[in-house]
Length: 249
Image (cartoon, rainbow, N blue to C red; front, side, top):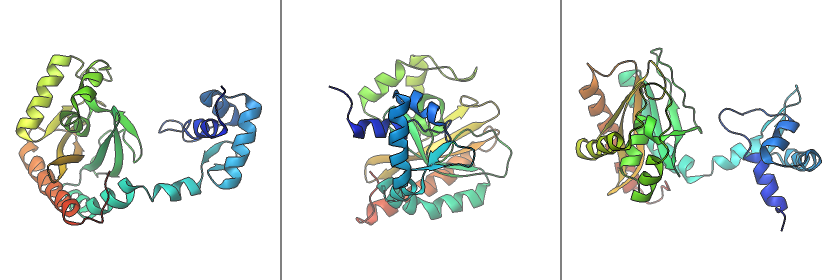
């Protein structure tokens, strides 16, 4: 049985990601695995509905209607809303790049980012997904993830820089320390010249997100940054736990 119209339309929308924000019709057809004629018909329907928009040069981008629907997602309307004042306070105190992230399958999904003033190479964007084993927020989320998630991640520890941890035993020890000490760190594991520190955000007894910062160097300021992150994470968690109308899942 062939793919349904819905699955083919979703394949077209799924062709976009953080590295492919603008695609030609032929690129969409190739990435979605569809004949060009089929892609042309579906792209036209998606464009008319507002799910896609066409740029002056002819390429397609995600349309405003998808963006509007995205704003209705609980991770947007709940978690980000609850976290916003604490993220801005944290940014104002440190002037570092601040991240709020959740686990999405085997990856980290960045739901908020405030860019810092210090020139540090940061590859994350709001909506982007990165490996859990190479990021501070990812290590926090992996430390509290179900055992089957950890085991699957451990089987695919890809090397991103020369400093990325790719030894399963070493990563497991780091995750144990995250649970014991309450924070995770990385040193140039995702991009050279960037270090990160992150802490869990809890709603009740459940870790629902990770809050982190990216800085050039952690050696002299780690205790101060961990303290600032924990205060902010506690505030976010208190807000999530205290307001039953907020949805974060």
